Image 1 (tube, rainbow, N blue to C red):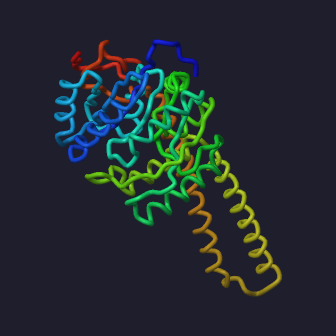
Image 2 (image 1 turned 180 degrees about the horizontal axis):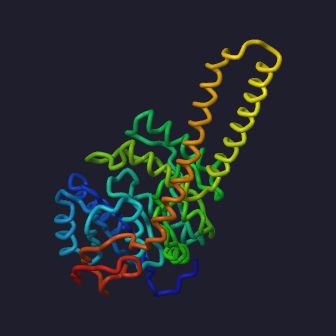
Image 3 (image 1 turned 90 degrees about the horizontal axis):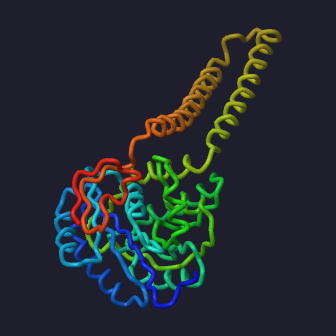
Length: 334
């Protein structure tokens, strides 16, 4: 990246927050220390309150009143982690944008190395987890299996063991903002955008405080979004299953005709017949479910609702910086 002399580029750091009052003070403290160590860069810290029900919003508004670098986006309700990230990216005005969670599992200090790679000319610097401290063996195993399954099914290669912790150049941010889909899988969307990308290995820390906002149910839904948003192979697999079942049904018909024509045993085979019927019925339901998931996503897209509704902007110089996706803004504090 070419940077003109005497002009400091702006780095936007997007931090989605949901019920983080136990950790947000330490997060802000660590981000302050990170900002003070930056050389030849201006910084804006964009916190996105994703409908928190605790004191997260109150604390962030207090920090924003004292620190001119802080911007705050307050959602009208909880829209989800990926949508919160999207809102932060929409509002970011930086030459580069960093995505980082508020729980401090992704250390802010690693961003220095990301900035160094960006200055070398890379458009995307994504963190690759070499260790995942504080996570159960079950979560580590399922995450490992998910990323490898996703890569096999996806039409676009998605880096293994990589979350949303990354730096993106303005070119990538502008490309991302042009993607209107409702079911969002940010790390896959950034991979799809292309440009010059590089991995940055780091050790993921334990959560500083509070509880994970991704229980098993949400993780399964997130995995479904990742697979269905970047591949039509499940549909192709359903066709394969249908052909396999048709072959089994044909074999069963031949077997039944052979019994009828060449033996006196007509009733025997009832168990095998029932098993075949149940098997084929189960496969049909699975295939219908896969097709239904895709149809449901089409239905959500054609409604063309905004991705999120912003209740309040705090600390922004212009009113409603994310109006392109959220046409309703109830308040704006400059």
